[in-house]
Length: 215
Image (cartoon, rainbow, N blue to C red):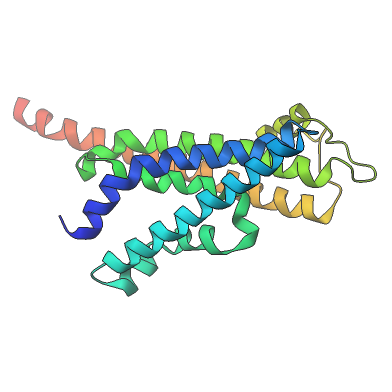
């Protein structure tokens, strides 16, 4: 195990916890509006402090990588979450990357971990995108998303690609958020399809030797 792997294993679960805290401090001031000013300021300070820790962690991993070009190619999505302002709301989803790094299972056993990673990503994205949509739509003229329950219902029907249609964005910012969540939902369906296909093939491979022995 090289230095990068050691760092990732040791820091992973702490960063998963920080990702969950980041989700809370981002979502709470929006869902609890109007929250007390001191609470809002505390949440914003915590949000930027956790973001700074993410930046430092990425810099340490880049420093420890034996091949930095290969590391950047492999971890480009994590870098995008950290440095691009548009992705500020979904930086907590980076915690899913830490789940992958934290596992000590053999690569084949990741089949057990993948459903949990998909479920965690979906739950985080649903809550975070709901908060983001509520933040940009709440006071827009003609908006129909005014409460946390409206936003969560919209996010749930969007991420599952149901598209019920009773709640929808009316602002350009809201439509941008919706487009991102729609693409995520389509990717989620593709991931689930690929997972189940791989699971079926694995079960077939496991059963084939047994069948051959019986013959």
